[in-house]
Image (cartoon, rainbow, N blue to C red; front, side):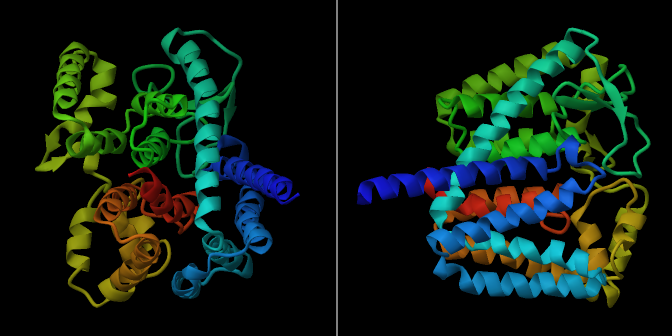
Length: 384
């Protein structure tokens, strides 16, 4: 009887994990929640799933200090942003994601890996038909997620793309999302956390999706893993393959402009690492020497000054360096409460700081990335 009860509980927990994984994929956000009420509804629902698990199966009692600290930091953000009650709910509910035990986080991560790989696999097949083979599948024009963007977005069966400069459609793989960089970031997070275990078919699909995204961050994470964890003989093989592909493909004008050019240096800076537009970099250097550097200039200022860019410096301009450090503290306090192993902290830092550098709104406007950064330490402890 006890065994049957445990089996039933485990089955229900798995179902709850898969439901959470589907919600997580949706709120990245996927194209079907752009510009409609589904995104906030599914975001809150995602957080409530974790509350339900904690109520039914018991909370993680060790997480209380992290939960209190994170609630305090997010409350500070609510106050300085002067958001509505609705906005405050959206910002504070992610605290519920911390409640469950490690077993549920690992189940959700496994489920998300499978959901992501299945949907990306279907999306890749559609991408190959349209972009590589030139098959004119049925499609329609849709408004962008970010209304400030002027490009036209096109929805094909199971993948999104937009106008490119050299081809009718942008060659970088975007999957269900509005930027190829989103695909690259998620793929990098999954593969590094999974220790690049290519014996699992899910990780092979994720690797292909990451490569097709041509994301600078994705290839940087792959390079770091190659240096730190891959045996020397395999390092040589991978490097030789990489060099060969570079010399074979670099003459392709489209590939050079969308990919290889990002590994070149312009004005003393690696092109792929440049997340700032216009004179924002010069402005920030002057801003660092003002009193506002500590407390910020207010919500939205950084975006106005770095229009079209995406830099962690925008968060500092908006809310100040004190808030930025405290906010990073939420993730590190959580990671340290899970494990103090140097290897875990190293790989966690690569993903957290790398993601924060190029997509600074982890949690601030992105519940999906907030959760992944909170769940990563559980998975790394299990895999490394």
